[in-house]
Image 1 (cartoon, rainbow, N blue to C red):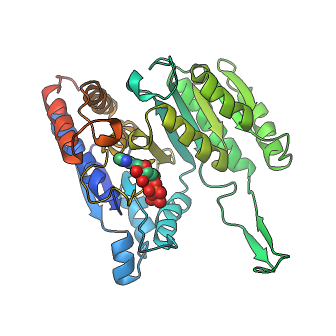
Image 2: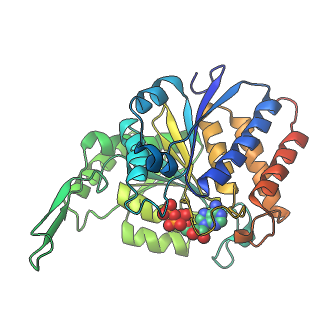
Image 3: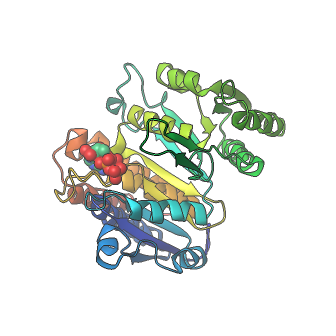
Length: 362
Ligand code: ATP
């Protein structure tokens, strides 16, 4: 059952590269949380990824979307990408297929500095870097509408369409306001490039003006995306919630990830409220470090915490985040964060923390 029901059913798709290393470690932490909570949570693993594609030619098997939609509350995803599949066809089929077919219209990317030493910004602390980026996840320039003409000639033309529907724009903007209201956040910033993209982002402007009127208690404002990129580096503390289109959200959330310690730590959720949603670390399969046992599992573990929030397991999500903060404070981390621990050692430390801090009432 979804969102606080008696039993959570989780589909685990570890994928490729370091996805296969960090995801089982995140599941290990989740199992410790499950034991601490004395609540049922079931994990079912799916082997979709490059190996299966190369072996069987299968990316997303027939019936997969229906199975996930009907039988599972959430999907814990690792990463897809493998040098043996240069086209990345399996990754596009599986990940974009799930995003579009499950209609996961909210891409939630929290930017939260968990330890002061991890930000590249001078004199910024945890209280300055704590914001949420909501990226529209089903439309925009990522729908794959377009084509090329006179390919391979000097007259070649390439067209990529930016698709924005009123329904699509309204639901992501509304989600941002709702999230702010439900989490006691006062500021929502919508960002677009309506001065140049007058048609597509003119729609964003009109919808934003309508929706913001329904949330008079929230301080809402608009920034062009170029201004937002400057402001988020100059003074990240001025933002609580940012909402923007697919392309700009992709870029600005990676900028945010670096402000909060880099790819190894960044979590994300692909959400449709009340429906099966997918949670994945922001990093990819990192073939350069795959198989070495040094991938940072904290991005996947923080992703699990987002999934717990989505499932209505709020105290457990907080417990996981407390464990990650403690590991960072103790410098019990992998080499990317300046430590000397392996992926498994970090996860074992988190499990230990969860077991020791299993306060009554969680
Ligand atoms: P993909 O094509 O699948 O996105 P990629 O290697 O191009 O893979 P990422 O995997 O996102 O891109 O990461 C870029 C680099 O950042 C990696 O090559 C790796 O060095 C580093 N990195 C990413 N995630 C982690 C992690 N969890 N732990 C340690 N280093 C990481």
